[in-house]
Image 1 (tube, rainbow, N blue to C red):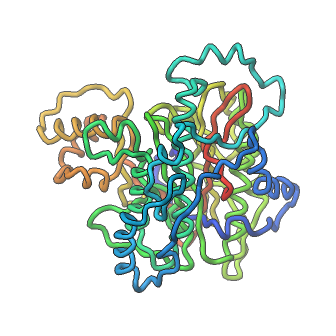
Image 2 (cartoon, rainbow, N blue to C red; image 1 turned 90 degrees about the horizontal axis):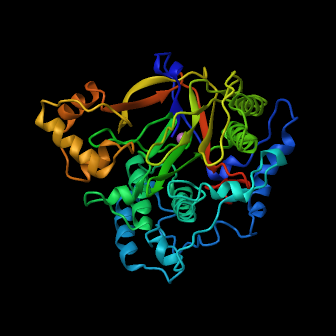
Length: 468
Ligand SMILES: [Co+2]
């Protein structure tokens, strides 16, 4: 989930887009300056082997039967139903994930230890910290705490297993509601938290509303109940951005899917930019330097669409961000364009390093659509005259806290007729509303994102998989 910068809160021209596809994401070479070509190749080939322990982080991701994978879109509804029935009976052997994924992760890892992400050795020894110093942070509430780290790795493994299902399943003809619900059903099943009882989804649940933004819509689109259904088209560029949290530790990770090789260079640019940002991250790394490296990587690419050549632009008013427990945007921002921010990353921090590239203006404006709502951390307590606002706030406190949520998440709790109460919470400064974020009409946008733990002993790209 991207963080909208101050600039982004103003209105700009319209635009929208979506990005990413597993199959096409790896293809394509930059047509512009090729200084970065080595780096580009590095990212994909080096991921698996750089694990500190040499283990493939996705080794446990074994899929079972894959019915429905080649389903004809026209038969989708019927097929989907039969698929749903099968998931109940088609239980996997221990250690094997089902397809679609429904086996709780605790069953796949009976020892309760979840696999690490990609371990990155500190490149500059000055940036490393001694183990002794790290020990200071072994209290609860810090990523150096083994239980916290294990929680984080669990969320990341669930992200990998569920996105594998997305990559095998999403194709032209598929509906965005089915895709979003499939992701959410998978995450909740693997967590072992359906989130239907008060407090349950605070132990583990969606990290924010599932984002499925298409084409010129860059971010913050999720299907809403009662809205006209959107079906994927072959020419779409879809950004899949979903989060998994375990005890409030949010994994924020996104990719782009396409079904047409036209967009390969766009995806290659954004993947390169995100990986460059990840490599530039670490203890004492300055935001301005990370941003500059991201922009240089991104803008060395161009993409040809319908005989028009577009330089890939870094989007200016959405940023990467640090993450705090239950808080997706922790206060620090990592833009994708040059800036003078001398702020440094610090040991123990968690960052979502994401980048967005576009063939449009590179400036997003709020669209008409509602993405979700989030209780503002440290919001002042206000006297709420409306009973409906008070009861809605109670529901939010019990189920989401400061986790951003969407209308579908309220619907499944049986909450309805909440719009008046919600408007009251918004106008009282207790809840923030999030809108879709669009680039200009007809443009295409792409996104890749990973969550990285900043540790003196070496960073951990917690959400890294063999896919991206
Ligand atoms: Co994010």
